[in-house]
Amino acid sequence: MFDENEYRKSYKNISLLFFISMCLLLIIAIFLNIFMKTFTWDSLYISVINSLIGVMIPLVLFNILYDHFTKTYHNREVSDRITEALVFKQELIGRFSDDTKKQFIKNTTESLLGKTEGDMLYSTMIEPYLNNQYSFRRNFKYYISYTNHVPLRSEWFVIDDAAYDWVKQELSFFKNVSQDHLEDNGISVGFSYKERTLDGLYDRKNFFFRENLWVNDNHIDLLQGFSNEEMHMFVKDVLNFRFELDDEEIAYTVRNDKEIEGFYLHFHLPKAPHKDQRSEHKFKIKFQMPQLKSQKKFIAVISEPTYSVDILFSHLQDQVDVIAIPFFDDAEAISTLPNDTVKVELDKWVLPRAGVVFVWDDVKKGAPIKPVEAILKN
Image (cartoon, rainbow, N blue to C red; front, side):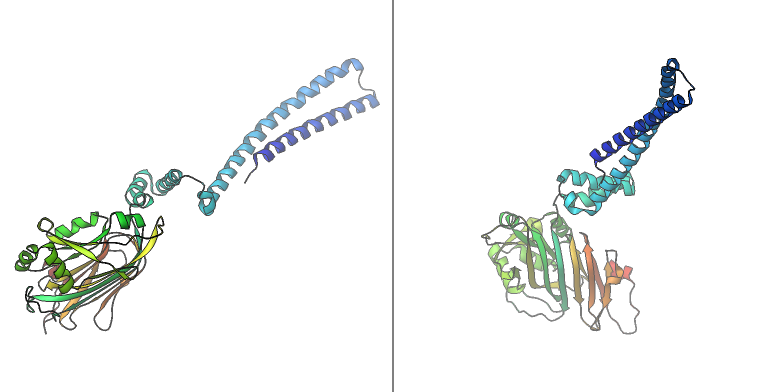
């Protein structure tokens, strides 16, 4: 990078050198004239004045031009060096305030895309992450397995084999979250009987998992009539729900509320002896639940920014035709394993509200497979 002191020193040296050279030329010219006896002392001062006037004009013009071109080059060079340092030297960027960094990102985005598009991208996609409005997850593993075998017989909650399938789920990931948030706000899991209610839970940060529990109207009435204690028994004995935080099982309470058309599980987290500002925690849940056979779809949603996503979905082999419809930008990430298990593997960042919808229809011998549009209508 240019040194301002060196620049000024160089400018003065060049001017001084030019002035000394002109003086030497003047002295040489005077001695030559004295030696050749071509002038008198009376005309000497007139010659000196004329010579100085002749020298000063190009000197002034030279200084003006030199100053202009040198400053222009200097400013361009300094600007290039500053830009290079800001782009490639992270330790230099760290010296600026957060507001300055955000403004730099905003200006750069607008410069690349234009003011309107750049401002849209910054305000909707970039700014929320810079303001820590999202937590980040990695190594997201989600295993879903359908079976028509009901593993439970309960006198107070009867499951009809003909009306229901049974779904086993296991979900795990690492999440960067503050210890204060875990202790003060806690974390929850939500189950809903209606899809519109489930969608509203995505705006509540303490819900790290939400799921549709599709059962018939009789079972909805039965579940909504449960007390919180009875609902806790249902979650423990029927759903066989288990939650682990950093490989330790965590207890929970259940809240049953008719207004929410579902129920919540709230987890009581132990206080950590040493609190870090933000640290990574391992989340893991396992459970099983009944699902109406008439609901021939399963939605797996990535609700937060997540790096590395693995989803395995298996249904009744040779009995249904499963189609995976992604709503992320990499259809090649979906493959089918030999045992009819659908695999989704993304080794990159996945943005919120991305995911995949699994839809299916019963296999009928000799009948063509229905197109996706027909399956979705069901």
